Image (cartoon, helix red, strand yellow):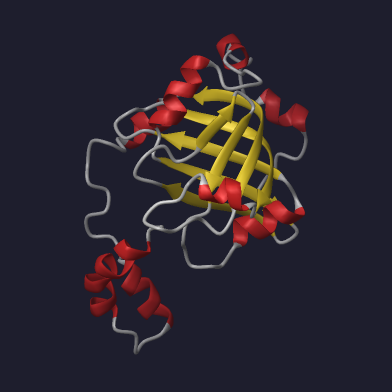
Length: 199
């Protein structure tokens, strides 16, 4: 299979960059980008580290991040599976990207920048709920913000059909690796297990 191995060969396959694709990029959170980010309950956090890349979903029942100022975002690390893949990467290589999605909207807002982790009590307690605070908070310095063209979400029909119908469940993924695993009990009981562990 032929490989594209240099930038000149890559660029020869495509037309010139659409001017608006450059114009839309800003170096801080503008008022309109603030509105979008504050409406987003879900984002993908992407990181890079010595073992490679990682992308992880992050969600909340309100804004998924707090906008501290137009160049700083705070992302609480709520309870999860404790693999810590993204957090380990941030400790070793601060480059991060976030992709903010809003249900029903075909545009996506992207933030690229650098980050560090803090366990400072005052910052963690700013997110306190139900007597719990996150173990750490990702502090993101915004490098660039822009919206992503809607074509990918439009092509996929992401918000117009039920793509989960007939797909394997989490329990089935686990049973594939361990034949004795009780996938049905795991799947039917997971929501009750998870709800008290959201925060």
